[in-house]
Each structure stands twice: as C-alpha cells, then as structure tokens.
Length: 124
Image (cartoon, rainbow, N blue to C red; front, side, top):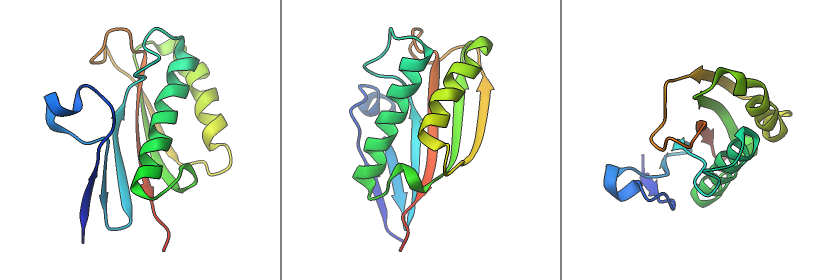
C-alpha cells in the first residue's frame, strides 16, 4: 500500500513532526485539528473551523466529508457538548459517522475549546 502525507497549514506541523492527514491505500486519517484561525471564537465557531479544515484536508487527500466514518471530538468544557454537537450534526446529519466526544483538561492552545480527528475512505 502506498502512503501519502497530506500537509496542512498548522504552525505546529513542523515543530511536532506531523501531517494534517495521512492517506494509506484508500483510507485517510486526519490528525487532531484545532480551530486555527478561529482561536478566539465561541465553541460553535471553533467547531465549524475545525471541520472546515478537515474538509480541506480530505479534499487534498482525494476524499470528501461524505466519506468520513469516524470522528473524535475533544472538548475542554463539558457545557460545550451541545453547541459542538449541533455543528457536528450540520456536517454529518446524513452520513452519521461513529463519533466520540470526550472532555479533557486542556488543549495545546489555551484558547481552543475543541479539537477534532476524523477517519475517511476513498471509494473505488
């Protein structure tokens, strides 16, 4: 199987040594994606930004949001679950991937309230 690293625009990629996404065969694994560019937004804006960055990564890897089969959401505030969930639902209400939502203490950037990972495939 062929492996392709898909770069993103995160300033952390070269420091930490990671790719926005990795494509192996027809599977794409999108790294934890913070709301870069919406750092000071509310939880809905931050969730929207995370998912928009994931959409771009999937496109660059040859897939799309419709082919996501798994997401993982990391929240820093329990009370944000519903607003984040509504934005997630806007993107995924039809395909309904397997999803996990976990509350953690903090994220890399202290202004971030959410980070999201996704796994998708490319149909042949």
